[in-house]
Length: 219
Image 1 (tube, helix red, strand yellow):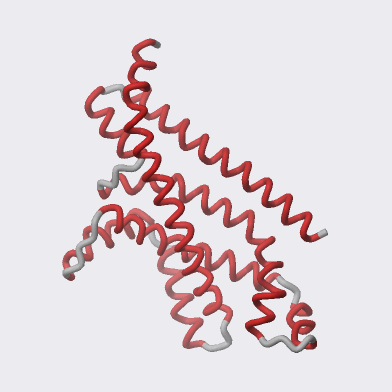
Image 2 (cartoon, rainbow, N blue to C red):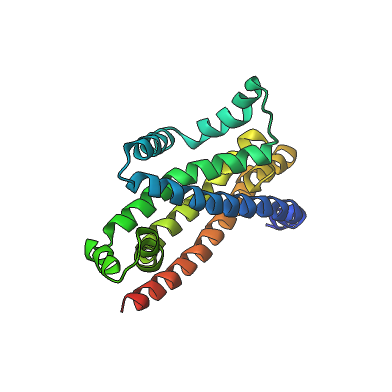
């Protein structure tokens, strides 16, 4: 027990550094993914096929292939075309592009779930389509999207462990490096699992508060 405590104390600075990378990747991936996903959702909802078709193809391709493969294509594949990225940049781009596809479908379905009468009422009030979307539809769609987007963010936090495969020094990679030196595999990976669990538990608490706020907004 003393040996495990000593190992964890010595490893704490390295795990903290890895956790910082994990949080940064998660926030960047989720933030950029939401922005790109919103644009894709608007394209998916467009009456124009020239906008709908590329967005639908992108969503299908990203959701239909493993995130690990996508990271490898970006980090190891792009250099063949003269584009070399650092591990951290490649991981950030990979997570953002992956999240965009899932955020797109969440936002698209949330917007589509808003009663058509809301659009018609906004038109009667003299609002154009953009104003109707921004002032009337999006606030209602956001309440519907809170839970699935929070779940996606939780998955993103865990998926950042895949960045270890392209040498990003995030939490899981730090654990790999420590176990390579100490051979204390069970202790170190159990500690890392507990950190991921705690991060997701805190996020779940935040999600619950947002859902309560959204429910209050409906009332």
